[in-house]
Length: 107
Image (cartoon, rainbow, N blue to C red; front, side, top):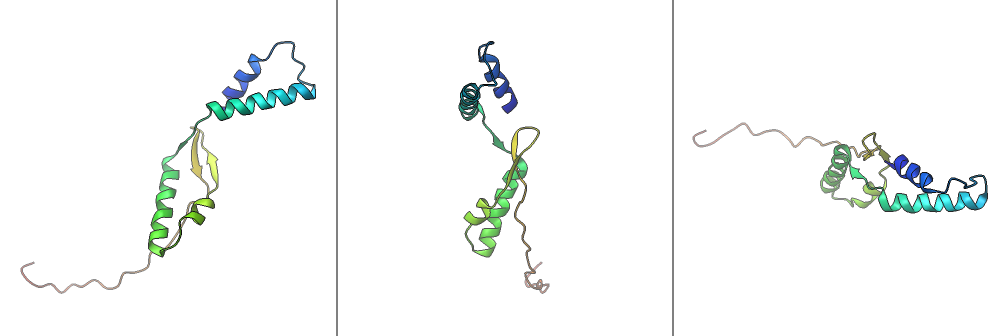
């Protein structure tokens, strides 16, 4: 999608544009940048959504702030143009103790 935006922008430029000139390069880069900001939209992948949920679970279990975990995320664009998290959070859940097998009443 991003390449399509760039291609459309270049095609709209006049045919006699000298792309070797610094001024033309500057104008073209500004127009491409504006068009990308205006037209390029992304969605979170299921993997990225899972990474956010893992960060939430980790912060709840450890009773810690979620913001540093979210800020540490490194994103990558997948082939389907969705955001993926390259470094999802990991954590270990310890044992909860022995299970009580003694029952009372009519089990």
